Amino acid sequence: MGSTDAQRLETPPDHDQLDSPKAHISSDVGNQYGSSSLTEGKLHSLNNEQASAWHKQSQPYKIPKSKHRGKRKAESLPAALSQWIVDHQIGFAVNLLVLLALTHLCFPRARRHTRKFFQLSYYNPGSGKYTLGWDDLPLVFYWIVVFTGLRAAVMDYILEPLAFMAGIEKKKEKVRFAEQAWIFLYSSSFWSLGMYLMYNSKYWLNLRHLWTDWPTRELDGLFKWYYLVQFAFWLQQMVVVNIEERRSDYAQMFAHHVVTSALIFTSYGYHHGRVGNMIMCLMDIVDILLPLAKMMKYMQFQLICDITFGLFIVVWFVTRHVFYLFVLWSLHADAPQIIKYGCYWGPTQNLGGPIEPPDRFGHLLQPFLNPVGLVCWNGKIADSFMVTLLALQVILLLWFVMIIQVAIKVIRGGEAEDSRSDDEESSEEEADPYQSAKSHTNGSVESLPYEKEVGVEGLDLCISYRRTSPQRKFRRGGGAASGVTIPSDRKELLGRIGCDKKGS
Image (cartoon, rainbow, N blue to C red; front, side):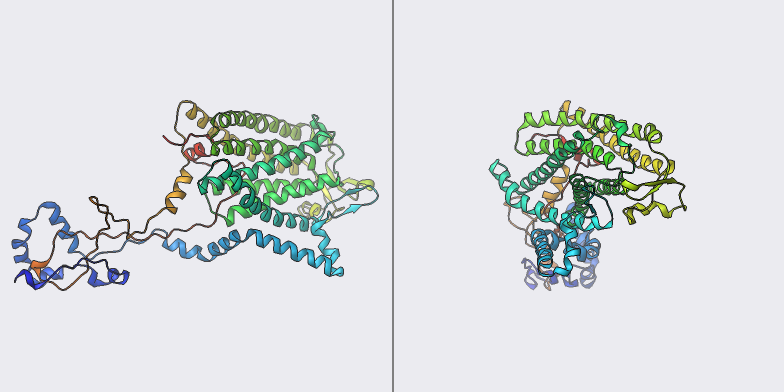
């Protein structure tokens, strides 16, 4: 049988041709023409590497399964919905707010309901203050929508252009800068407002006054607005981390937002806004310094970044592990001495009680159901607050240990890397698998062999079939908001707060 019986054609096949059985050289070829003579006549001239290549070709080719194929199918619908929300945050928020405003203006009978979204509820003309109740939730929902649109608009049209003006050219770094700048702006504003309220209160530098006059069933308008908007912000952060791109510290971040929101909600319902105001001020100051350090890193102000990071560590320790424990000690030592255990009812001007709890569990929900209904305080309720606050302290201690380890490593000359960013960039820059098989000699794309009926002597036994399964890249959003949450991965933590220098 001569070499003119067949001709080998090397042209790239279509996907269907690759997947078809004819795209593979089967062991039946050897059986058809006599495997014994083939082995004696051809394989004796092959070296070990070529013989191995022939052995691989003689087996049916199996396309490797994608590791993420099943996951993509499971997440396709919610991921597509999340992507739509992310892409239309501004329009979504504006349309809802415009619809609400038009309803309020055009339908007078609906105004008794729509005004709850714009105004504080439960106003007492006699005292000039506000009580609390379920009608406060429409205002919280309103500010969740406002924050959603405002955050996207400020980042897209103010902060990212500002990052470009500061010399940040890469898209990812501009998004990172905008995220940190948004957290910096919000935390600076509400930390300042919280400090103003605390400075002008009687519990400024006097923790015993956190518990006096309990239950304080009426609040100043500014204090109530501050508390509800803070609650709305953290609820909106829970939405952000779920609709935008999930990062490696998603679980820690989401848990942090859930615990924070739960503490704000329960402290508001049980009339402990003073304690909530103090704790939020202790926490928010860190949310100013950490984003500021990150912003300085992106703008390559290395010295300012290092100084800010050092200040961040000191402030973290003082506020979250010293002052915070003072508040917990006051809950343990001062609250039982000042608050008389029992249940109270009625407005502040005509407060009744204390009495014994009328049931086992039902009274625990009364503060959230009735503005002047039953509200109780006893050792079990105090212990439940203490356990929650101590659990938060444990999380903060674990994070602080990691921060100290990172600081020591950086001081010793350790290289800081943002592993999360590296992963994202590699997924974004994945090449077409049919263009990634480059020749090592001239950089051209290798031609994949196209099967044709050939004789044995026309077969090139040294061809190695290789196929890379195409991996679809998928991203759920442009960027995720991050609060003060510290990731669990130490290497990632280096990149997030280490003020690393770019380049090695």
